[in-house]
Length: 416
Ligand SMILES: Nc1ncnc2c1ncn2[C@@H]1O[C@H](COP(=O)(O)OP(=O)(O)O)[C@@H](O)[C@H]1O
Ligand SMILES: [Mg+2]
Image (cartoon, rainbow, N blue to C red):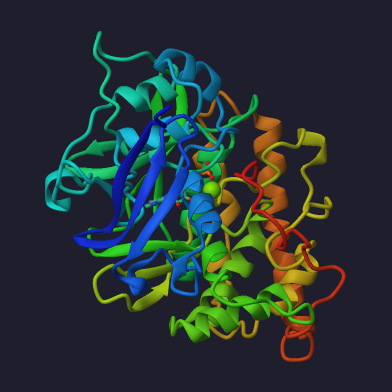
């Protein structure tokens, strides 16, 4: 019996990287052919004795699909008449708005310039279905960058005034994440931290955050997860140090400074979800030179977003990622606070109050609690800085028991 196998070439923009075969039933890569351009392989995919590690490539490919944990995905799949989100990958040739990888069918040569989502518009059908709004008509176009979007929250790409923008919702009754994205942007404006700028829109009465695509046709976003696959991590080396070692080898400039800023932001907003797909680096897709840390994005899972009002308190114990399990420990990894203008944070809580003023989701009591708690986090950071205690230099090279153990084993796709 003939297997339903389709032949493709994995492409990096215009460069053929390797031939591969996709099994239609499982959507898995069932065979990998010769590698044409080793250097253009996705970062962190190993080559063993001249062959691509097919298991790793499969995980990478599966990881491009919408995670099964995406809010509302069951209903969307029913509407699309598909069994898994992996089936959507082939429908858009694996094209994304976060990097330049795609697959070209062996029997229909196509150029990147003919199909990429940076230059070509795309249908809102998949996005609308993901948002539970149905599609425009009888024939649904599945050619959409939404098929390759990661993360748990309801989201869709939309072209607004010619710009590719990511629209992202919230969760629970307070739907707080979009507001958090906006206040985190304002906070980073004040501290001059490179970041993705989020603003707020309302759709059907619900607030959503909107940000522009920070990737261009000349760049790739490479997640910290894949950066950390480029080297073996010895047990005695901490995740923090391992990330520095990997980015050093890849010659990514400014990572220590970027991590200092990320850990300060996450301390202030008590971010709970800075896992290894929520930060990373930027690579030039043509020269393959790593240019910088990615601007900070996905800061919404913070500010006690899923806690009842009574538990909103600067001291509430909150889990921390990616380097330590508590923010108190993680902030000690910051190598320098010299860049931080403490005066710039003055009154940030009033900016939050203004942002939440008209929200029907966040009532007065919650707003008051959030503003007070944020103000107290600023005070706590000041104390940390004044105390001068730091694990940096002394301890950052060693793994310790308080470190997140989530590093080893498979990446948990249930994470946002
Ligand atoms: N502005 C952006 N430009 C390009 N890619 C983005 C942008 N924002 C997010 N992404 C990509 O989309 C993924 C999901 O977005 P994210 O904001 O992390 O959503 P979630 O809150 O659901 O995790 C990110 O991990 C990143 O790969
Ligand atoms: Mg995310």
